[in-house]
Length: 249
Image (cartoon, rainbow, N blue to C red):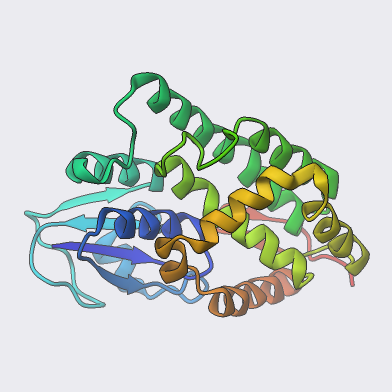
């Protein structure tokens, strides 16, 4: 039995959903509203801050409000969960068998987490320059092979990159974020320019993949993100770890 606790507006549970679909796994989802989190989740399921994704492996079927079985394996942090899924579903080849390609995949994931995600937060909420975000996307594009995915065949490196990439495209096209409409238009134009021709092909291939089609609910993600931006403008809260003075109009 696999149960994933996930949130619609976060790219991190989306990573795990992609990998579960690619593995052909049978799983349940319990959705958590990160902006209106019920007490039972942190108290009974993930006492380490009540973060998602959180995966429970084993035990009986779970329902909201229930505590996982003490016999079940409980795993937090998206990167750890992805490695775990690669191990328990070896036939899915979520990581390549070649050690060089495995290292390349892990290095790519590190760049996504240490550069792209932090830069994206800065751009969406903190007034960071669009060019900072475009530069990181260009850096990631530069290591993509001429065709296919991050290391050729689809891997957990793509599971880490795709959720951020589809959100960047969606939010820029809808001008959702703490930046002007002119900046949003500039970003959309740049991502469709020859500068990002390889990334555009990667995006198209990723969107066409069944795992992305099933797990990317753009309408619901936009609604969730709109709630988050509304809270940000009223309170200055970015997430559970970051809060700034209330932005001016």
